Image (cartoon, rainbow, N blue to C red; front, side, top):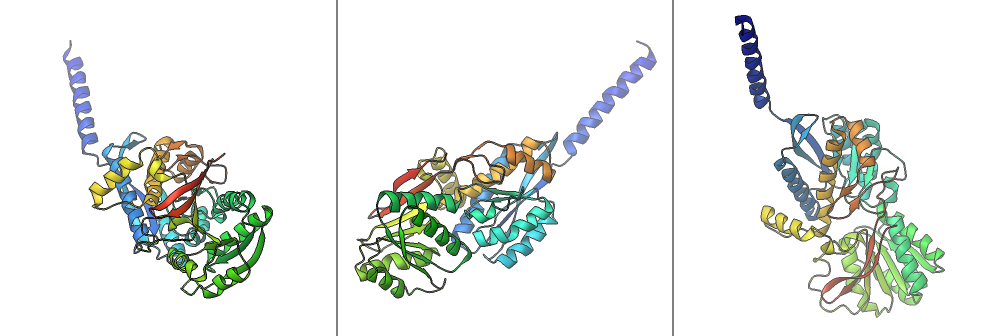
Length: 379
């Protein structure tokens, strides 16, 4: 080999070594995922912890996107369950480098923030809001990983009013965004199931006085009372049924299905029901393992609904990997195409970002707590 050839080979080897050394010294790209919820609330804090657990798991896998090492980071914001604050936070996330946002927590804050994320082309995955209003605007940026309230209440009404013949229904809400819309949906579905709405009432979201609606239910001989409102109010309402010796069944919604609901209430002689947007989470594959990991990491029991934020983070990271890009528009496209096997469900979306094939469970409160009464599998 000539001197010139040897020199060329030496230069090639030296260049390769320098390139490898440079690649080894290049720090990973920090990829930000936004998280917005009322962080002073216990359920939202647990949701935040579950999201953080997902971030840590993803980073342990040494992820890379488009040939570059990345590390995911959770950026949390407290929206205080206030729609105005949620709009401010949405603008802040929109102007940041976030690839997507997990949030918000309530339906009112989720829906209020959604036009801002839409305008910014930033993916918004709602882990907890099940208001149909979120996806009915057909924003390409909106994704709902639980079934909608409208569909769930239709199934509950068909079963309770149509099949169980609980025809005389008193419908009560807390006057809030979600409470009012859910009461409207249930009223319509109860009528469609040949039921009679004997009274349609609203109360203050801050009251604990249910005397008037319960008196109305007794006077009108209601078969079923539907209430959509805050968990604390649902608890008070359920405890007061026995005072009026009402034979009517009580149907509640959502997050009342937890170990803390009616805690230390003693025997409940009224029939209390609740409709939630999932199959029984404790029966889902992977739920037991997730509960164990959460307890080891945070030193306490995870409420089942926190699984939705865990799945949301994994879903967003999976979409970025599928897109092989950190561009917001490509991640949104990937979310519309993705099929993700989450702990809470097998997650895929329709054109509006609503969950495909959602499932719901109607629970009954027994002495040992909530027990599944009827599971409605998605179609």
